[in-house]
Every structure is written in structure tokens, then in C-alpha cells.
Image (tube, rainbow, N blue to C red; front, side):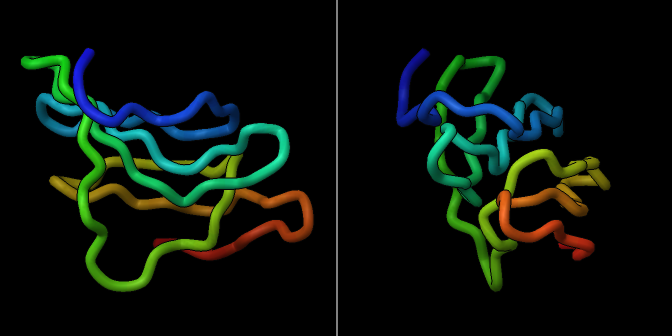
Length: 87
């Protein structure tokens, strides 16, 4: 693959939207992330899109569901808090 790929992580979500796999959140055993990465399946190129507006708190072990061209994030935790928010 090409482009800036995500660092190793667990507890992230992976969702298919069009020709892209969208990776959100997760943790590396020390830190939790709220980053978004896209892997274009036609070109096998990673990108990190700019998120417009507020972002969810860093989290892992959440649910993610594609709705049209958007990704809805629900729940998750960061070892301190369990979230009930929907983004």
C-alpha cells in the first residue's frame, strides 16, 4: 500500500463506504485514538481525511455503521469512561 497508514491498533472499527475502507479509533495498549484513515481499494492508497466539526473523544471498542457516505460512531470506551454518545 501507499500513503500514511494507521499505526498498529486494536479495538478500532473498519467500515466499507463505496470503494474505501474507513478505520476509526482504537488503541495501542497505551493510548486511544480518534483518527480516521481511508484505504482506497482501487488504488491501495491510504489517506487521512480532514474531519469537519467536532470529533468524538479518542476511543476503542465502539460500534461504527455506514449511513450513505457518512460513518456513525456509537459508544466505546477509553479505559476510564464508557461512552453513550453517538457521532
